[in-house]
Image 1 (cartoon, helix red, strand yellow):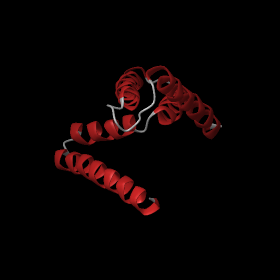
Image 2 (cartoon, one colour):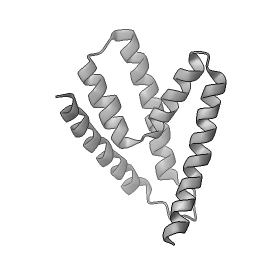
Image 3 (cartoon, one colour):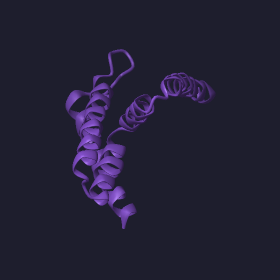
Image 4 (cartoon, one colour):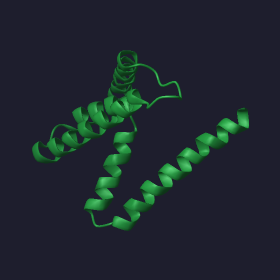
Length: 120
């Protein structure tokens, strides 16, 4: 049953992301990508609120899976990245958190560039 909640939530998150892009406008590679930036910061704020709320009030696991894994996962994975960084940092693994952030960004951007060049 959990997979169904995540599946439906992910679809809703993807539609929300599309609506933001539709409202704000698509990125054309020549201007600041406000649509993706807005989605990412909204997702990070939402996942921070929901995690705190989940830890404080112990919301049901099914609700957490639907909203955090499903909706926010479909909306933006950047929020998960932010959450994982904060959890590592909060648990005293500062160098691991910084390594995670650095490698994720450098390797991720590098692979996008490499794949683009491969097909180009």
